[in-house]
Length: 111
Image (cartoon, rainbow, N blue to C red; front, side):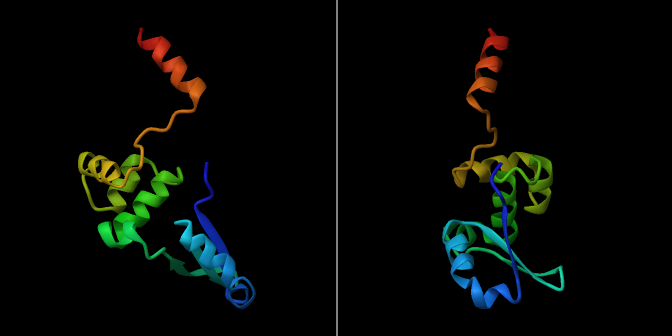
């Protein structure tokens, strides 16, 4: 599972702004905290955001990072599951992720 968020404190913004920018360029969401509480969600300003909007871009990223189920991500994107599946396809995000052994086992079962 990919780590879905970069975590930064307000103080980190002075010392680690380069890390925040690199994460954004890699498509990573970041949370900025103050006194241990989240205060800002930083969403990369990229094609995904421009194409799908904030709610859907965040839902797609969290689903891809395995932080939300398909149903949860569809709800966050304010779409029925069927339309969210289409949205995943448009964003080139696989709806199902199997590791090679798991895929081989599934293929064997289906024979």
